[in-house]
Image (tube, rainbow, N blue to C red; front, side):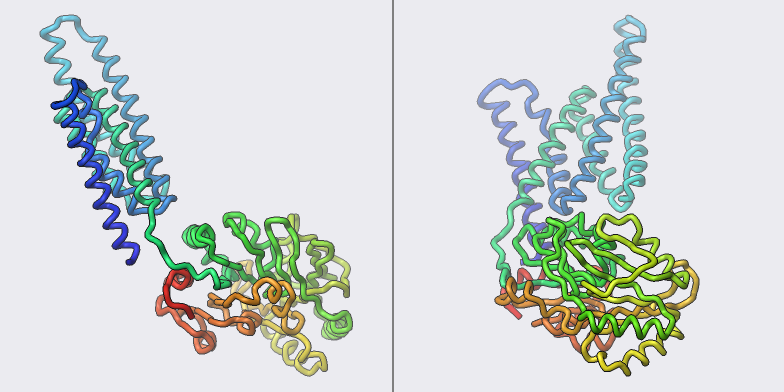
Length: 459
């Protein structure tokens, strides 16, 4: 049964419970005991609307609904207080006061309704949720008009609406907590590529956290270092470490410990640095020592390198050292070159005797300064960068499912049992993949991962 069908069933249950409680209150009022106006403080229509709205949205949307209604409570209470204060200033003549009070109550009601709509629109505009304006205004009008027609006492309107809304929210949230039993593929290790951080938004974070709460084994993968992804990862309740720098290291954000590091052989590092000196290029050298990431560079020679270095200053996870280099504990070497020069460097690299003992990943990117100058990033790692003891020791019995749109995740393809990508990926990656989502939405990968975790059949 899909999510939409479940939401419809839950919504029907909320409506039935809301009106059943109303009938029970009416019966108690009339048949069993004298409870003056007990049913006045319960509006089944309001309870139904709020409850269904709570079911139809995720927790983040439910919180925003509560914020909208909180502003409504405060606004209504202030207007009611102002109304009664002004009435107290009028004449003591009972006949005149009776007429004025009725007219004033009517005027106050429509004024409050109009002001309430304006305030709600402004609040939702500030919260950037204009798409829910019609729904919340409809709810607001239902609360005010139905209550005013049946109970002209304005304070009773406020109390009734408040109690009904709170009960509706509680009922909707409670019903939404119940889920039908679902099959879960806990034998999967699902590796989710977050190299493109622009696609890791609030929705992706919510879905990953939701899967983690359901005991899914999720390991993130990125070409970046902990310094670049720390802000994004802080929003996730990770239960596994993260593959960083294209798998050259595995970092645990919970205890700030590197679970595994695949370093380049010192002789290879020495030969590469000698090679780059001859070409007069200055590489960035990533070294990990005692759970600390050091980034060395002799000098920065172009605009992109300056931006790259500046973005890595003052990081809690990285020490940038300009002016010196190291040849020990090196897990990767990076070059940032003009595209025209990078072509020659890549060709020259292939002539080295050590070329078959390293992994080279390269990709093109326009300047971070906003200009149309194109640079090439070249990253060099040890061969078989994901062939480390941590993965083999902890996940030997797990089926590894990889979710990525990036062709440069070479190491992942070597360990993957099943590869999932989308139709926005390159043709080469689509040809490598076992499954291609025919959906260009940036959330296609995370949605497919969720489907595969709960699907009864395995892959």
